[in-house]
Image 1: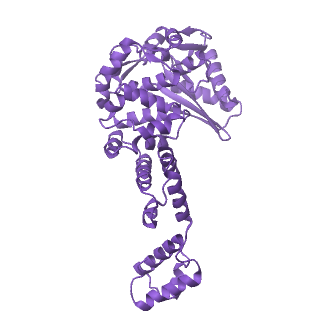
Image 2: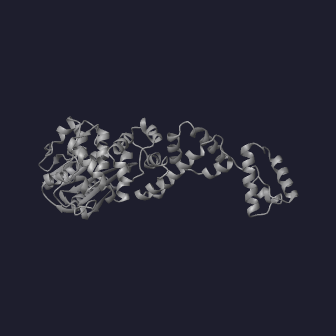
Image 3: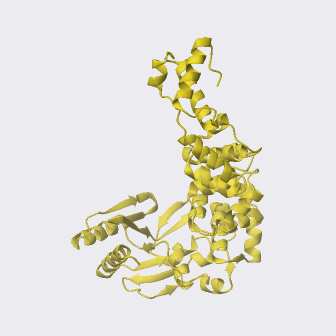
Length: 407
């Protein structure tokens, strides 16, 4: 662990010991540690008000010289987080009060009841490999609680859902299941496979924002290509939107990129090749940044078809984001390099004469001035006008002719 992360965990553990409040490491971090991997998320659970506990952890950290530390609280779900900044490093500790959950309708957010029962808290989770707890402090240090035999399933490389209504209650678990299976090389057991097949019908009960969040986690977690392949095989893509599928170009683009991906690039690689992307974007309720990146990527792909690209087309592509250019290069590795070299050259090209010089030659302000600047830029890009003298002669010729430059 980094020193700031260690300081966060020590402060929470010390507070737990002094208050005699059992503190548990829960969820994916226990799974990661069992596999000998780095724990990406430090999720802690306790049977106490997390807001008060977080405030005391903040006070401890400030007491030993950490000034840039603060807590955020979500009372409805009994959660809190403590964030610590040290230089450019930002680390976070997530705290959750032990709770049970009840779903009143498929896809609805759960009704939460706080509890002192760790078993009830673990039972509300998604898969056995994510339903383990490791005691850290407060009288439970080094105690492993594994009521659903998650360690056995890890050893057998098995993905097993906790109960039959899991996907009906919360169909986002289908995305999490594909991600967990992909990252840890797990396969669903027969019962879980049947529940997955039945559960895809409940994806339409989930808001676009919640599904987009799961897709963002998929991008950041790594092995996105494998996750999407499983999601397609399981029917999760089709259940998310009838037109959502894996294009062959997407498969190629992600094949040799197993690490974390920028979310905008991931979404563009998935959606830009699909003709139905507008409807999918609407269903997913994505941010404007993501929607723009997807559409820019699609334009880059379409513009690379047919060889040389005209200045007029390049002008429509100018200012395309780097995320879109990256996604397009991954999707079109044969055609995009040439197009993007031309685009970069177009963006560097400036008219030989500026607006002031054109007005001194007699070009009036307004549309004629804009047309002249655009024409001189195209001519310089194409190499038909190279020197300032050539440009001035051409401008004088057009003015003398009394017409539009026609560039």
